Image (cartoon, rainbow, N blue to C red; front, side, top):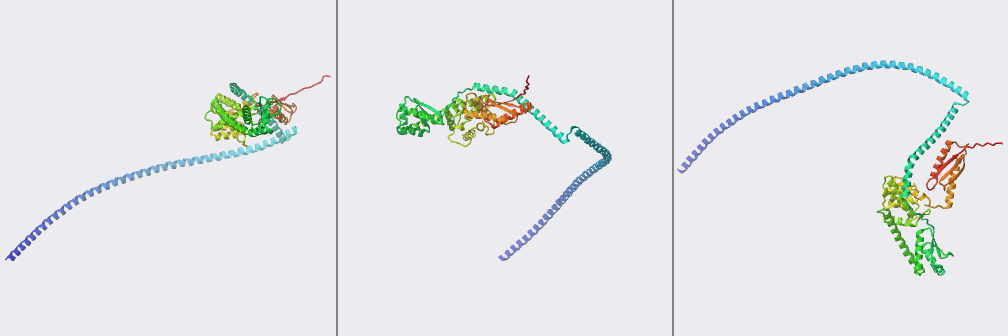
Length: 512
């Protein structure tokens, strides 16, 4: 019973499920058909839109294609027009060229005819020239080459004479215009700067109170004087000169050390070798301190600041050095002041000029003994102690041993010459002075036509007498110039030397 019910229930359930599935399938089919129809309608719409877009794209491409075709056609038309214009231009040029060619041929023919006539005329002229030359040679008795040579020599002599006259005229004009202002500057500079001149000797006289001290200074068997000479490097001369002892040495510093040491020994009264060595060492230290102090005081007096300590020491050492009898420190101070004044007159920096003038002779007081000249060695020292390039150049170039590269260099050179050449500033050994005068006269006598020479005014003027029959007026001017040039190049002299050539004509007759 229960089983039947269960079977019936299952069967009804299965039938109901089948009915439900059938109904579900029909709904699904309807939905599917509806979706398909909707998709077909949407596809139709999309198809129509795509067709419209394709038509629009086609029309757009067609319009662009037509536009490009039109542009290309226009360009082709323009190119054809240009080609036609060029063709017309070329044709006109061809016609012009043909016309010019015909004219050129006509001109060439005309020129050929004229050249033929010119050649014939040239041959005729050359023939006439030869005939004239032969006539002139027969008349003058000279060949053409000889006449040409004489003419060239005449022209050369005339040109040389005119050139010398022109040179002298230019020199005179330059002297008139430039020397006046230059002399004014130099004279004002010298007048504004005055320095005393001290003549140094190689001997110092040490005065003593009595001749009894001479024996004590000599010592037993001369040991004191030998110890003193060995310590100072000075020769001590004890002779019959009353109340005086001579100290002889070329180095002024050593003489001063010996003088001060002797003074201290004589004052103290204790004179023996050990005491001598002690006093000399102490005096050397004292002199070294005085040299440095003097260098500082000199730099302060001149307003030269920032010098290296070694340069200050060299400046102070100049006090004990002389040049041709002129105290080197006084000379350097004078050159420094002259340079500053002259630089101010010329609108240059007076401080640099004064510094260069003070240091220009430091090469003379070096502790070493270099093989270089004092000017070049002084320049090396200045470079070593970091002086400015224009100052170093002025030091090295003040004797023309280095090329001048600044305007300060010639100023220092000129002021050095002014300080050394003014009267009384320096003295010269008689033998060298006489030799310089003889060399000056011999130099002028070496020229042909010179009869006598006289060096006058202490060698500052040379008078040259020439024979009037051997030297003309024009040649005397050239001779004066050549002698002055040789003196300037070959000789050393203070200041300047004036060359005067004298030519005279004498007519002598006798009344009987």
